[in-house]
Each structure stands twice: as structure tokens, then as C-alpha cells.
Image (cartoon, rainbow, N blue to C red; front, side, top):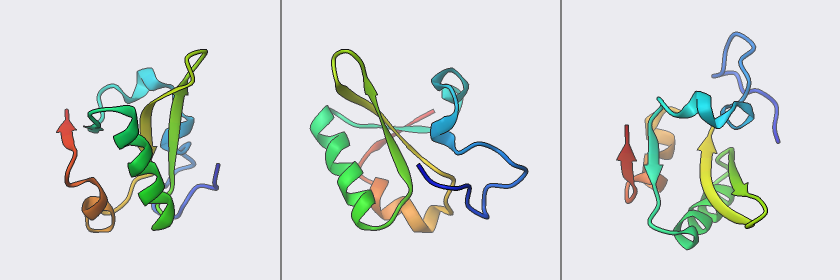
Length: 86
């Protein structure tokens, strides 16, 4: 989707290029339904926030959204109404 940003060091892959299994221990936000996830994705896109929506196949249902690492003050405004999962 995009090149690795300066805040991602050491040649790490962007978070959306990693296996979902590797992400299970990282913090995530919970969206109540696919519409909320889609709305969040559109908001992030409008504000230039790098992200990727994962879509389950063959159902074609958006199930997850991953962001590259950002300082909290840059993305909190978009994520604050979602419940944080740990």
C-alpha cells in the first residue's frame, strides 16, 4: 500500500503486511459493526492516515483495520470513540 515511514525503523514491514496471528498481542480497537469500521476507514483516508482494511473472503466483509505506528496525538481524535482491546 505505501512505503515504510521514518517512524518505522529497522526495516520492519508495515503492520498491515504482517500476519494477523502476529498482531493478536497488540492493542486494537473494537468497532461495533462493519459500517462503523468502513466509516472509520473513510475518515482516516480523508485525514491522510495510513491504514489498511482487511476483508474476509469469500464473504467480502471488512473485519479489521490496521494503522501504521503513529504518535498518539496524531490519531487519537479519530479512534477515541472506539473501545480499546488489549
